[in-house]
Image 1 (cartoon, one colour):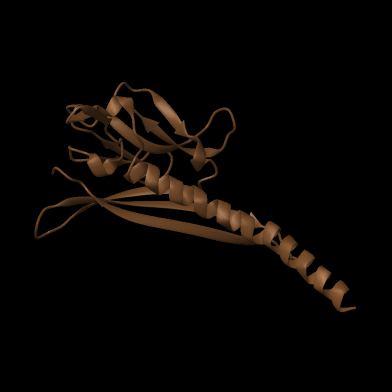
Image 2 (cartoon, one colour):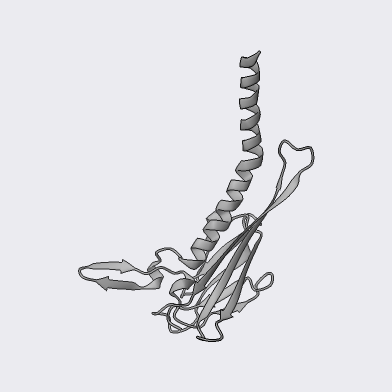
Length: 178
C-alpha cells in the first residue's frame, strides 16, 4: 500500500509541476530575457568595435550604452518604444519596441539597428506588455530609463478552474554619457 501511495504521490507532484510550474518558469524566462536584451543588449556588429591592445571587441547594443538622450514613445500601447543611439550613430537611430510578428501573430520585442533593419528577439515571443519610462533625477539631472516587461498566462493545472498569472520584471538603467 505504501509503495502504491508513494508512486501515486510522485506522479501527482510531477503532473502538477508540468502543468502549473513549467508555464510559470517559461513566463519568467521570457520577461527576464526581454529585460536583459533591452538593457544590456547582445554583441552586435552594427554597434561598432572597441580596440583594446591587439584584440577587437564588439560593442553591445543595449540601452545601458546609449550616448544620446533616449526618446520614449508609443508603438502599440503606451510607452512601448524607445529610440536611442550608440556612440558611432550620431543620433537616436536604434530602437527597441514591442510589435506583432506577422508570421505567428504573437507579441514579440523587435530591435531596429542603425540601418533601419528590424529583427525580432525570438526568445521574447509571448510577452504581454513592455513599457519604458524616462526618468530624470532632479538634483543631478542624470537620465535613467525604467524598463518593465510583463508576461500574463492562463494556467490550467490541478485546479478545476484555470487561473491567470502575471510575471512583472522591472529594471532601471542609467544612461552612461548624458
